Length: 69
Image (cartoon, rainbow, N blue to C red; front, side, top):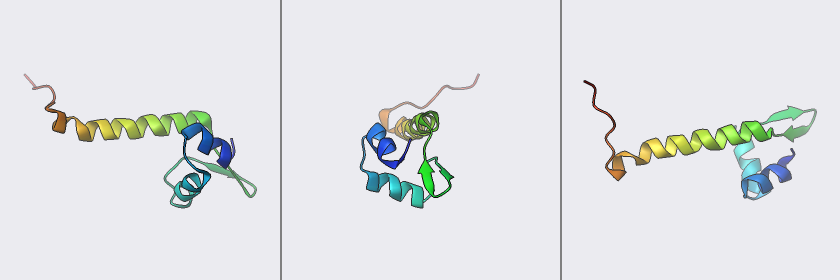
């Protein structure tokens, strides 16, 4: 998908996608002078970021994890 399609898919503006590309934060590839995105790669990226966020939030929610033993 192109930048506009990726933006629509993720529910953000094309400017946000372009900024993420510029900072190499979002998965993308270039084909010639075009920036293209894989839906599967974007899905994985969103999932991974949500898991990172969840891991950061769990201690604040009172979850301490399992105790060994």
